Image 1: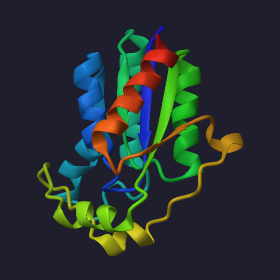
Image 2 (image 1 turned 60 degrees about the vertical axis):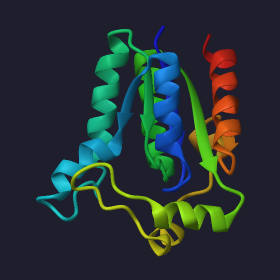
Image 3 (image 1 turned 90 degrees about the vertical axis):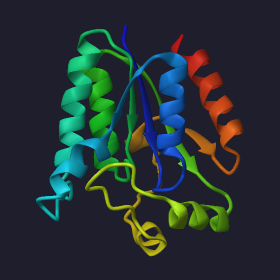
Image 4 (image 1 turned 180 degrees about the vertical axis):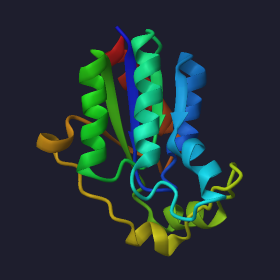
Length: 172
């Protein structure tokens, strides 16, 4: 049975850092929606605004999960509808999964991370702090979004250890 790890959280909460580190530790495929949307944003300023990146990501994940590969997904995953897409992916592929929602207790630390961030993908425009705090992000609802583990990333090493322990307990 394939395994699926889904990361959610506002920009600057550490999703990419933790997802990449877990991918290396566990040898899971790593899929990031930004890698799908960034090349298109060079040519189309509204790339990804209608969910195309999420749909492409779901298709890539589906194919790999059906081949028996384990996947880590890195997205903001801000809406009930996007979370529903990932829960449907889990059902369609009969995968077992863990969802993480990353948060930062310190707004100052969060703001600093956002402001100091540099894009690592050509065409990816990193948001400014105002974009992050004004972004539509629906509160997690267990009934609509399924179970998730809330991970506080003020200390990234502790956050990584928490994620790793949860994955090893729930997916092995």
